[in-house]
Length: 479
Image (cartoon, rainbow, N blue to C red; front, side, top):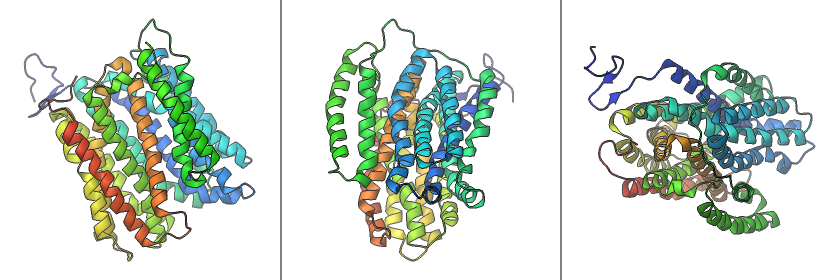
């Protein structure tokens, strides 16, 4: 192929856009960031799989205490992500990223060697803090090294790594637990963290940080962090503690007071914890709102699918993990393809098409599956539809939120987008638990009700994107 005059010889001329060449160093840096995100996803999902074995070993501790290994992690991840993203833009993304990796590595080793339940739960909460420092900065750190026209592919690859981690985690974790024991699930993070810490020093750039003479809002920082933490606590724990539990009532009341104060202060302060004006652009708020409902659907179905397969169809844990695997594989595959197509033709058409898939998936599962096993005709089509729609859409939503603002705000915007995603995931799981109930054996009609109810949530991304996402031509999302 010969290059056109005035073009780099390595640029590829296609019928859509001209895809600019990306240095190999940028791809390698993205691989390290994506690998970190993947292992965090594996560890997070793996804890759910290993939980029965953990409760058996720490049998002297109550299940409610041990459940904080799950909920405490989620709360810490959601609580500290926004401050981490904001500080990374001001103080250095590379510094924040490596701090998160070190914290995640150290806490993983403590999980492996935990002598009792309290140490284990504490290590899991610290893991959540490490994840909150790492997740938003990992993408913000490497994205500026990509040309604007190739960033959809970069975001898609990063998102696909997390999805791929979720894909392999159920079956991988189940096999590890059954073969070696639950502690080895956390040992996975050690070699990955070592590779990132050794090779990342030379590959990961510092990138541009936000330069400003305004001092950070040291009142708004603890106020906003506590408010987000209280919201996360209510979402994560209300289903197990009950909505009338004094701690839930007190947390909800605290959040109701702090959140409005935080919003007012953020709008007035020159350097707030979260600059809420980043969500004023229609491209950003529509992408974030649609991502919220995608996350609700994704997290809840990941809880419901294995429960249904093991309780109604009597699948083993490993068999259930393998049965679910096509969904995240489709999400990863179509996510990478979607990023490539978005770079060529703009992400708008993909987002609009993909936004209809969750509704189709929920309806197919509600109408086609039954109490008797019918995997190929009743279960598989629904999870393939959902995985495909998630792949085509979610990374583009993340990219749309990021590219609604300049590179100097990537950490803050990505943290805001992913904080909303994590809180929405918790809300989706809480809604699923409320519909299914808390009985040890869940009847089929409860699962049926779940998918009919969540079909309504599945329609919302399509309404938001097709009704409000900006239409500015083929490249409606470029900056």
